[in-house]
Image 1 (cartoon, chains in turn brown, yellow):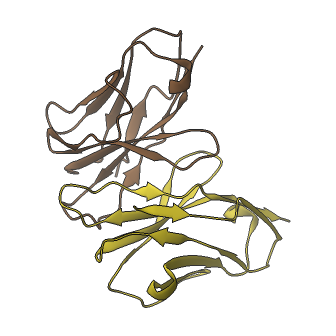
Image 2: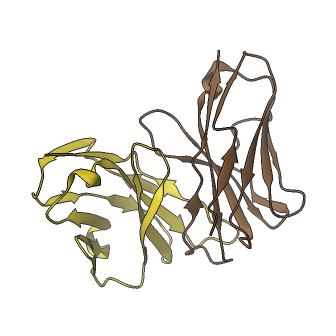
Length: 115
Length: 116
């Protein structure tokens, strides 16, 4: 079946602009996660959705970052007033179950470059 | 505080050699899960294995094996008879059983280069 998809695959934007990154999880997966991976580092957690609600947004670095999942499927990560430090690969993952032990399946990521 | 340490930044081996990737974790939770993921040059993270804190049995899957030792807080990964296709960055991750928190804590990864 189809895996997690993310669009766009690459996004170049100017400092100060607004961007939206989209994630389409595996069909039927209720849990959705966003992570950010900087060069040479492991992914860092940003936000977790269970259904439509953000159950844990403790990883969002500041109020310029916001994410939604209005219908419990597709999610959009929104970044306002982008800064050069926001440049990274943004990864989305989904998981089938409610239990914390269920493995997460990752998408290919969106590489964001802020110039 | 929760933490995952992968002290080996990069390892190079010659094809057919065995190689072990180390992972040490820190957690105050008694119930937790450990994972290994592979990130090939294409960039997509591929799930390899999940282990819960109550199951210390070692696991073998083909050329891959995992050794989980709670006494040393380690979850090491061994590739037997390595192949060039094993070249990738490998990540160890921790997930704690805290209510409402299902995030992964990743290590910084180990880049494995298998030379022909």
